[in-house]
Image (cartoon, rainbow, N blue to C red):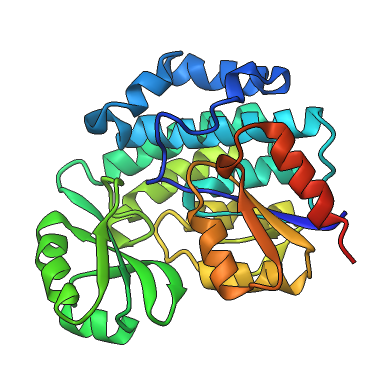
Length: 306
């Protein structure tokens, strides 16, 4: 069974995500680890729009729920993936799913990552703006104070900047025919504003135990695949302050020729993006299924395809 795992990033978390998660026995260890950091009432927190996007809460939640869901799938018999990739903070659960990090270490690192990033932007208000339908060169020409945070293609991407610059850019780019949306991420992730976060997070990565991954990982920092822990560690640190090369990550995963792709996390943004680029390789999000068994049946059917 050859399939790829994609792990979602921040911005799409919601109170009803993965509704079966707490009842899945295999999910319990990761949930306990996560809840020790953000509390057992995390679904109530997700229902509060003022708290849902808090960086320290969201990054731990995304990492913890993703690893809980993956552990539940494994306990139910899901085979190992052929390749994995994680979008933004989703790299932490992706590295754990590949075997490079222990799940508990990844969840703890999510908290440290958020703290380092919050401290990097303590004196400024920054954020992210999703833009599609306007060429990157045009966006940067019209809005030179923005930085490319996530490369999704020539006319699709996420841009980082100061709140004031993002507020100015949104109507300007809409007037150019762009579809624009402020993301529920209250930091200019993957941009020069995060450079002060690098040393602290790199030190935290140096302090945990690393293992050779069981499958290749597509790296945000470069878009390349790697199975070497000495390559993965600096790449995971670097992506905090550099553009996420998600278009290249998708291409690297596609070149492994998986039979299907399963997204783990909230929403289905990565699965939709994949299906738009690679319609011959079916992709679904775990969050689209009412229960884990439905996802397993879909995976078994599609991952075994000739």
